[in-house]
Amino acid sequence: MPANPTTAIILGTGLGKLAAEIHSASSIDYKDIPNFPVSTVEGHSGRLIFGKLGNKDIMAMEGRFHFYEGYSMKEVTFPIRVMHELGIRTLFVSNAAGGTNPDFEIGDLMIITDHINALPENPLRGKNFPTGPRFLDMHEAYNRELISQAKAIAAEKGIKVQEGVYLATQGPTYETPSEYKMFRIWGADAVGMSTVPEVIVANHCGMKCFGISVITDLGVEGKIVEVSHEEVQKAADAVQPLMADIMREMINRA
Ligand code: HPA
Image 1 (cartoon, rainbow, N blue to C red):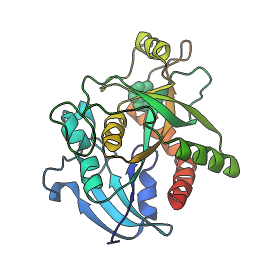
Image 2: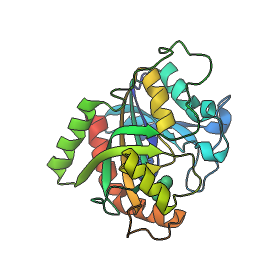
Image 3: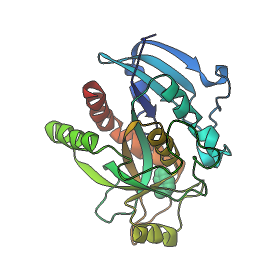
Image 4: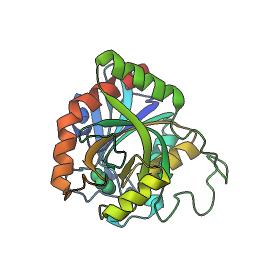
């Protein structure tokens, strides 16, 4: 096991295959870690991987926890607390999301510039942990330097990227047309069911965060059709190599 990874990645939808590129790796199943939740969603396995991506020491979470699975916000974000204790300073995340920005297309990658927490709870509710202040500043929840770097990398590689605000709902329902419309009015470019809790806690732990959404369906008036988990997976799988290309390079430079 590498002594000190300072970079971690949550292999959300669209990045699962990156796990196979982590070499010199050892892993620990979530079920073997005290207090760790165990993931229940199809297509998400559950283990922490420690190894090298390129020549960078990395810790990866294969399988993440969602509020809709029934976990408390403390459970959803417990792995971030563990990462912090292990010395992680930078967090990379990915997710699948429905696009509410009318300029987006299915298969677009969206660099997350900011988020809106539309979950019913904040993971920092309750006794404050000494990792950060009671009232946490969130003016730069997603690190601007990492965002610029991602845009530069995408341009170098000729990969089209969008930028925007990610809004997290509790799920597990996708949105009604009226909900998509409301979230657009609120300022969301994309809607999903993850990432925000982890990023809040990572910020509370002083980590730099960077995230990308794969736009797997459209919540745009006139373009709304039935959404299924299978279609979301399929759309995410199709752009997985491009997402991996950007993340690999970001991690290499982190
Ligand atoms: N809404 C919420 N979560 C999602 C969506 C969506 O349209 N697509 C993928 N995850």
